[in-house]
Amino acid sequence: MTIAEVSRRFDLSADTLRYYERIGLIPPVPRTKSGIRDYDEESCNWIELMKCMRAAGVQIEALIEYVALFQRGDETVEARKALLIEQREQLTARMEEMQQSLDRLNHKIERYEKGLMCKEQLLQRHQDGKENGHV
Image (tube, rainbow, N blue to C red; front, top):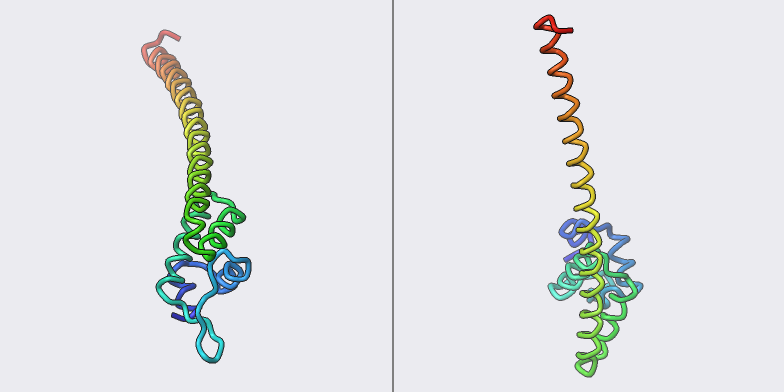
């Protein structure tokens, strides 16, 4: 696949794809005899993984380290697993923090809704009183 095709497939700019490769976020992409990038399925799988991990907030440095370990071969399996476990723990902690923030927002919104309901009920009673000649 050309860089333009991969760019459309993953909704990433060609510059971003070249940057990912340059910094080691994805392994080197195969090239044609004329030197043009020719993304294969393995390259696309790496891009998909990195896009997913970045969306989850995994730091670029950790992902670069993961790719470098992967390229060194099977002797790094345990190190790669440890890195992934560490990233999972960090992601879980961020998710818990986000859930606490969401719970707090929901509570605040609920208080506003209850407060508005009370005010609306008071206004309605006041309006009913005017209509019945009590005010």
